[in-house]
Amino acid sequence: MIEKRGITRRNVLAGLGATAGLALFAPHGSNELKNGSIKLGLDFGSHDGTTSAAGFGAAISKFKPHVVCYESGFTSEEDARAFDNAFSSSRQLPQGLPPFAYTFHSELKRHNITRTYALDRLTRDQSKLSILLDEEKEREKAAVVAMCKGKPEEAIVHYRKMLSLSVKYQRARDASTKAILQTLRTRLIAHYPELKTEPEIRVLVRYGVMHHGSLKEFAQREGEFKSVVDYTAPYSLSLYEEVQSDAIRGKRISADDDAVAKHLVEFALWDHALSLGVSHSNSGTFAKTFARRFDFEQFKVLSKRMASLLPGASRPSHLVKVMPEVPDTRERIYDFLQQHKLLVD
Image (tube, rainbow, N blue to C red; front, side, top):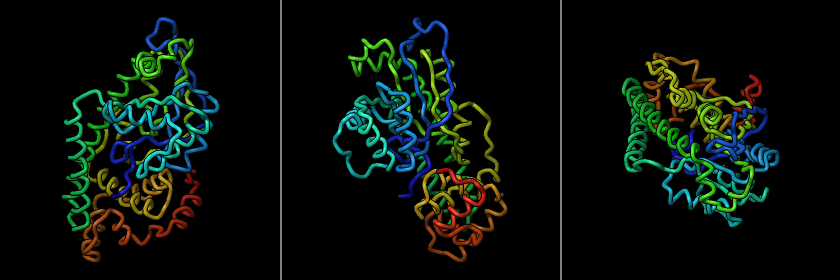
């Protein structure tokens, strides 16, 4: 299975990320607010494993949270409770989870954090969202098949539909997370009754960078928290992540042939870099940098060339085999990023 770019596309648990600048927002009349006793810390970062440990650990050390909240991949309440229990335990996690799940768990244990809470618990009809996600997977698969068979126009149609389905899914997750944030104090006390006597509850939220703008704005304007502190480091979004982030925040997004062609090329380059062992963040930066050079006409040439020269092609990264200008090893990709001052971590 191809490793995906964002947690809700295929991953099950949330990743952990970087730390840096500080931004503080304190609303008036905190004592009268729903979440008035909560000091909220934000740490948005990549879904990498080892590269994210230091930043997440630093955020914990600075903020000293009572609870760490995370994204679980929009799971049911039952599954979310299972994740909470697993992350709060000192026992080893089961095998087969994304790398950042183990990083997350390791840092929680290292800092003696025993309370966790999934923020994207499913609060609406799960079957409908499951269908939406299944349709997205099928459209993405169809786009790759069409691209490999030299049918670029068909690939564009499928991938455009995939992006549309993905946006609907992300908006549903975003709305669900915000609904939970609005009643976070009540939920946390129900989960961890001992917090009721705490005059100030420090809650650290760890999410992927794609959600940073939307959730930070909501926390500051409508979350009714005592204060909001942001430890998120500077980051770069991929083309795919930019679309999701903009759509969640209600911004207009471009889905013409040239824009979708760039997305497909980025997808192929991302798959290529990840398969070589390049980190998640650097794979995204590399893929985005190269993909921006292409338009629909160039994509058509690549797709037809691949079908002609590589009749057995079956995955996105195979497109790179007809792109001689693309670095073909892990070392060359890192050299390229370093030369252009694009290395993320």
